[in-house]
Length: 532
Image (tube, rainbow, N blue to C red; front, side, top):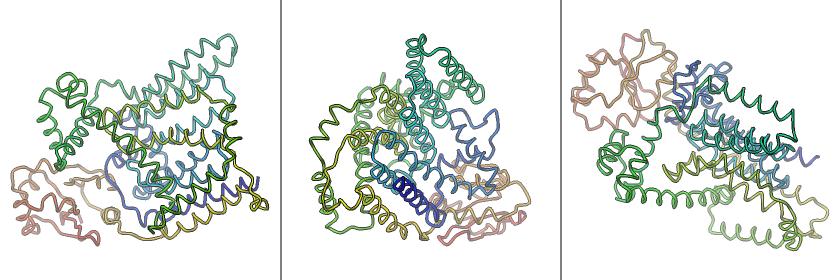
């Protein structure tokens, strides 16, 4: 029992080390995550953001917003909380599969500090990742019939689908398996089985009434655009050319290569089978190599991060050889022969992962899909470790091997403290802090390429930079009634060669703007004097 408490202490300490100083070294990252954040800030039923854009995740943001009104603090809190929950979920999952306490703690801590956790963006993927690990651990720890197990798996698949819509496939597949087992077990588990089915129906129908169907919405634009964009990513690599910098340019290149009548993957298969086959085979190769890279990253790179001695590989090989020496191969072989495999539990795991396996092959192996493949990797590791038996070494008799392993882990966590207790430039967060201190007298009309508007205290109107086409920047600003232009490094690069913007730089005062520095990296804000 003391070892259990020691293990929990190490896991919580590692979590604290990882996130306690997060806002001081991690900058804000824009993209889909800030879209979800914005949806959470304005969350309502019916959900206005669209059923394919994570209504449940937006509700999660909305819940915490009650307690954390500052949007920037909410952003960092959510990032930290999900990072910690991911590590805890990994620990619970591998423990449920029979991995020893010390090994499970090591795996969880290595994942916590790995590049697959805190750096993962968008963070929304961690939410279904935790749900999947949680339900897979639950069905291992509870002696449930298969019908009950797959009802729960199906429900979790539906919850995941309201974070990422592709998991609706898991919901349907698990539901089909659950119905099969309900039919097989109907004479054995009555009437409790019917109560489970009733609760499932109420929850599933309720979620559909609240948010709608996340997959079959009649609007497949999101998956269509994703396919087009990622085909262009592969095409650019094949042609050894830079990727287009805007979505519009990406889509133009896609149609130039594939044809104006090709939009979806189905169209591509019918009309451009050679390009499509090359796209899919490239994705398969990238998926395999990326997963292998992630495994090496977690269990090797994370372990030796910060120590780049030429002896590093030698030390890793030495640790591996010692570990192989300590294995009791006779007992281990017997364990592999005799210890049963939970086949239907593994089917449940694959059912939950199928959408991400399909997505990486047909669309692209993005990091926020590959995180789910790690569940399968963890299952394989747990399958092996739970059957390993170690020899007793006399020199270690006075100590518990688990205690020694946890003691070394505590040293590893301590060594990590300087890496995460530091300050680093956070220019985007500095911009956010600056603009949120302003109290404009009128509604803002914002020209930007990023998502700063999400952090503004009051509502604002977004004017897309792509709307500027005529070369007269000052006239464009007047016509669109723009009163807020945050010139980040990205915006300065975007307009750097535009003569109209260069002219505006010389006359912004006459247009009624003032120029305010926003961070130490050279960003500045044009804002109408009348707003201040």
